[in-house]
Image 1 (tube, one colour):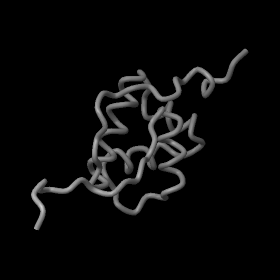
Image 2: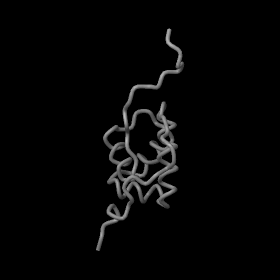
Image 3: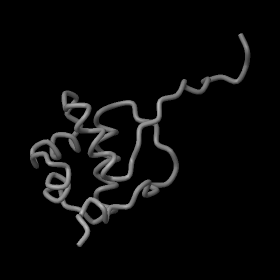
Length: 94
């Protein structure tokens, strides 16, 4: 019998890459992915070994949530963080 964590897709696509510039934007993307996977907040809390309050706070954009927990939950949802230099706002040289 497989565990619920093994049943979650790895790298489940959410469409195009989404730049995240705030905790509110990250929470919204994670909520959208959780719903896309047909998971309730309590389901994700159980899978992530965290409390439901943490999921609620995260999805509402609380800026002081624990980073490692967020990264672990993103992994469970098939999401990842990629850090790169911002694209230039202007293609013209100075």
